[in-house]
Length: 623
Ligand code: NFS
Image 1 (cartoon, protein in one colour):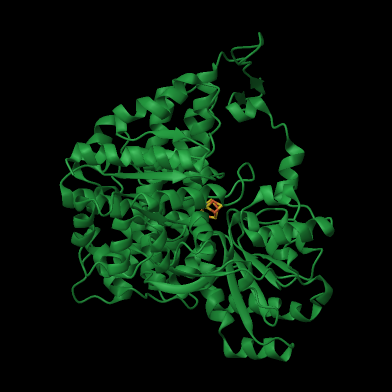
Image 2: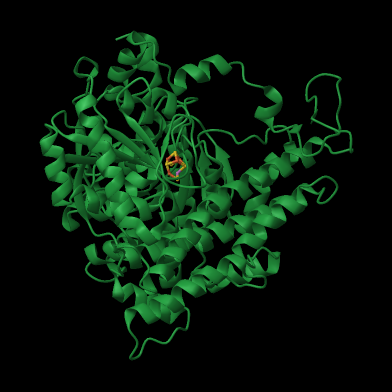
């Protein structure tokens, strides 16, 4: 295998497919990244401003060029404004997802759900109690209607507080209130980001970034948490489940359908449609043995968590999956879907099907999905995939064989269940030191870092140091492919963590879901902090995003830090053009919110930073 190919990923399926791509002259994100080099230094350091038409302006950090934009904006102002816009976009993406789920819950409660039903009634009751919605003598639909409307209203709230923010320890809420960063409404804070970054409004880097934290809290404890909680009510709260991961899950004899994107509303129905006897019979009539549904990105995680649908790869594998020549359809909704997929699918028999009015793509077949007709549309989409099967070009089919078994489904409820009904055994393990701490490793892939190298090495180092890892998103898929989501992976852990995992029969790395499900991790942190009578910032916990790339990841990083958690990034955000913003994010923030960022691309060094941080928090707690 060529050296350049090996350098791109640690995953053998990727090596295999990159060789196929090269031979067929097919382009990938890695090729396009190479063509972008050297990337624009102004953009990279965050000192390019396009917010008005006196610009574009840029700051010359090293020469004797301009130090201010036409309006007088300095590097500090421009960097902070740009960062705020990234947070706004990320928070908007997560929150719009949450809004769609609330909408689906309302439609379902009204009997207009097109095939959805309320699956977790116990959770519905718990959430209703939190919102002060009466449950006595009422049907689940009546309760769900009130809950859906109440959650829906959080988006347009003007005064706050956002209900779920009150799950945080009282000390944390008091701190947010004191700093004036307690979010008032989910949309309101996002809109205010856009207002503040308009020419001539907020020109104070600290003030801008504090508002970024407020906006991001409205994501983590608002939009994302609503997405997670209401998805559980509608589709069921995940429980431990077995599956397998990586490109080897594709089956040459089957109609292979890839679901990609983020919202579970569509994919839930695709799961149902793919099991529909009439459609299975149709697939057989076309010469296939059946229908094989696989996932990628966070839609992949949603259907893995609830149905055990195998993830076929993470973010950087989306193009490679089409290149196997064995995928009949890629069905997408929103987010993390490369526009490159349409033209690429055109080189194969693959149908690239877009479904959201919000997300159209070149080269896509658009079959618009509306919740009211969910199941019918899902069947139409699956039928379209099946019809493509006879067009498969046999000589182009190449499926890498590697795949790994995995165990996923660790919602907070499932973790408490695995612990025997209370958090106590976990708290005891933390106090005794068997488990030193808990670290969330999350986020994307990025061609700037060898694919999966950051994810896998960081996670392995942490478990070796008796740190329990919880994960979501594309990190979870990376770990699944590497066999780290198996109870046997406890053999790679330190003695303390190994013993705990063996006693409970759980992996040392717990897959908690999609990226909006990082809200599950916040809930777990809040519950542990409340049980110990401390703030989240006192806990031996940390966050990490070794290969992040999306604006959603920026919003996540911001709310994790604003929740009091130390967070290590593998890639620097575009802020290096302002030393005062860098100082605030990597040092000053700790004195304000109890959490801060660090940037460390080397996963071994990142692990060392986290291990030290966890040890320091343990000392401070006296454990
Ligand atoms: Ni998260 Fe999920 Fe993956 Fe990154 Fe994209 S899928 S929402 S943004 S690339 S982890």
